[in-house]
Length: 202
Image 1 (cartoon, one colour):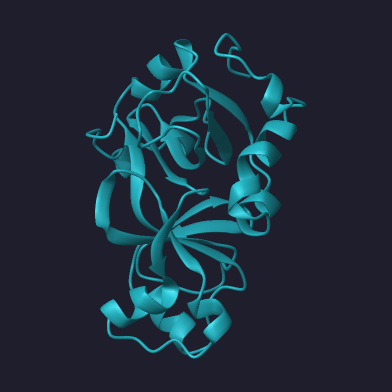
Image 2 (image 1 turned 60 degrees about the vertical axis):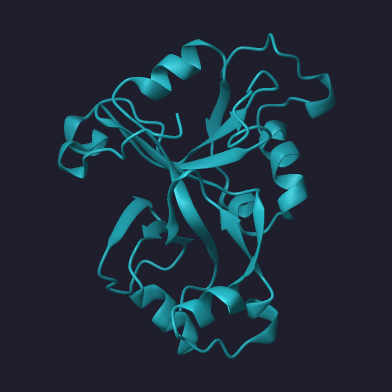
């Protein structure tokens, strides 16, 4: 899974009119043995016939936004924001930043609108806007992303590697990292302590 190629946006699920799990959470089952994904909650930004792309939202790194902004030669004025951890988004493009945010009226260079009110930006200009105090009201910043090739995610779902549930933006932006897994499971009415390797995907 870690070596999967990101999907080709030229054949998106929206244009194909097929079922898409974009704007859903993937919740790793206890049977997940891949250390990159064990215990994770992934927000799926894109899913279609050519594959899927998402961000892990519950694995903070030993890197803060202040550190990240210094790396890209930007000054972050807010100490509180600067102390926010950068998240491990997945094993693909781990040196590249991804910003999931709730600001859609700004024209960033490389932005994918996931749903009404949520977008994924992959260009530095969103960080420049944050440095200038004009960035998104809420955001999650990751290094790296998670990607699946054609049919790969569907195969993993058939093997009960993941639970799926429609995403709640409050869990993405407002719930503490250690509580995101339980909060996402609660959307399905599942007590994490009762979850076994035998539960199928929703």
